[in-house]
Image 1: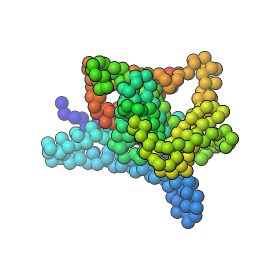
Image 2: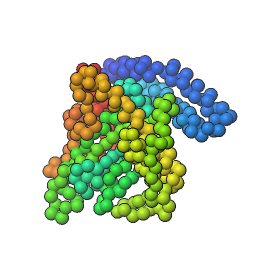
Image 3: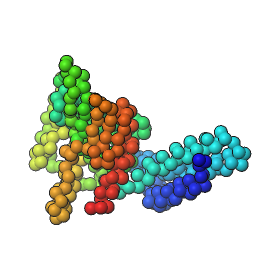
Image 4: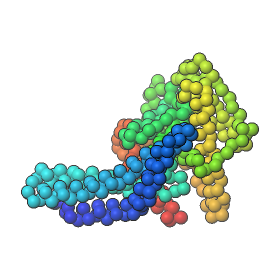
Length: 369
């Protein structure tokens, strides 16, 4: 059956108008103008931290505006392409228009999901920590597989990432890893990944080739902003320094550059060892600690609300996705029921559909609460 291009394009325009309205282009352009003025100030780099915040925010906002304007142009170009194909009765051009229609529909769907991210910290960058849980060496290997999955996802989208800490397990894989994804709405997008991930496979570490189930936990935090006012008195922190270690406990540095921070009042511990200097590692660890304290404050507020509603809330330890490599191949989200029969592609970073369905599911849960 021939595609009803006029009807399809009208539907695309309706979706696009909703997205543009929610995105508020006038406000976005105003923010860009204000940030551009700040970025042009001759004394901007007198305060490198502030300069980095300004230039990063400007880059993010400009990329967002470009994305929206290019999408508007793509819908216009699609309409022109269809008119041209139909005027000349050109089958090849019609096929090209059909392909572009599918691509535009998919891209608009991704932008539409972005409009659902309206939480307090959703627009921020994300800090992700992955920890191996039950399952021994298989769990450590699984944690490393998840780290690669998220880094590959970020790479596919050309998002900048920075690994703050990798704690290697003795035999293989990782005990834990913490990294940052520097992109607009990274926190809102990736926060649906928070929870316990489960892997079922024939263990490559079992001489008898038995099936093994292992678990890894994913924690997602928003990056702290200047406006958060997370002040940590020096007396509340214990600082330990030690040598960075690589796989198998091998020392990879001849100086005590790795840093462990312990927040005494809460018992929260963070480590950072991937920078070359102790000073850089301490600064990175402090950013992670601030993010954890910010999240703890948010969780405390949420717990109070949950107690008032008497619903108990939900913990980040809940199982949320299952990766099965044996006896069949499937990745399935246990909340949304979304699944993929290609675990290899998922582990290579193809997780957008899981993220989108997760965000839509969470929004529906909020609306029905």
